[in-house]
Image (cartoon, rainbow, N blue to C red; front, side):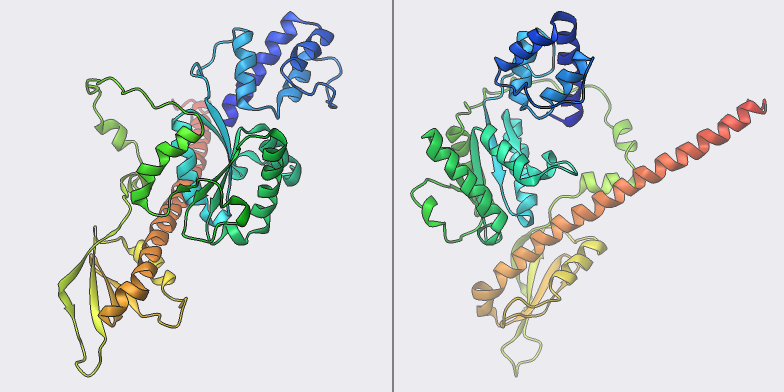
Length: 370
């Protein structure tokens, strides 16, 4: 549930309880749902404000239960089947955001620190409370997370909950082939190490969360509403972002690959891309390649719809392909971030321009030139 939707639902619950009950009745009623009604609030004379403050940190599931019992209409008629806290390194946030989005599409409540924690919150307290309230704790295992002290701290809290509740709540989610921590090795893990495994593994994760398979959606006739006006409403930057598809390596072009200097064993190996990347994408890729990550590092650059790497052909499989794939994935992610930031600036500039125009129109109207 989005923050504005939570705010509106809490507001309606508060108004409903204010109209129906006394202070004492509200406390008794909310206590029945497990709400801590003894915590301090700033409200003295307003039952509505008291309800809003007392419910501010409660889960979406609880708010929906209260709303349903009070017969308050809302857009969340389908019950949330499970909830999960996704523990991860910030360096894996792009994968985690995608996973969270797919889980939410299946009705799973997902807790992500970047979405839930506000400025001024106590990190330890907020995260501890969130882990305690979520049904499951998914820990994303990667080279970044296994060395993160913060991830280790969250994992210890979750293991403690698992021992206290005497049920499985910790679910390892393997993002990269890494050594699994000793205390997680006896658990079945979800393997997301390759894109090919995602479609196979994701249903297994849903099953572990107790999510029932979705019923096939009925075939719906295409909407006759013309699409063109919607497309035209996008700004150029927004259109670039909407139309951008991740660039990938699709083949090795053996016809283009050649040895520029027969005295050496080094070739210009041409890798075919799914399409020629934009200029900014090329700049990001060049930056990714600027700093060597091991002693076998080789020069690589973009030529049209190809990546060219200067190396011994046999080295490609052993050393370079993994590096190139990582650099391509990073370039896709950073290019999207770049376009997103440009689009956000564009929106701000448009709003500022609109304000100026509205101001001038108002002056024109007051001078009687309308």
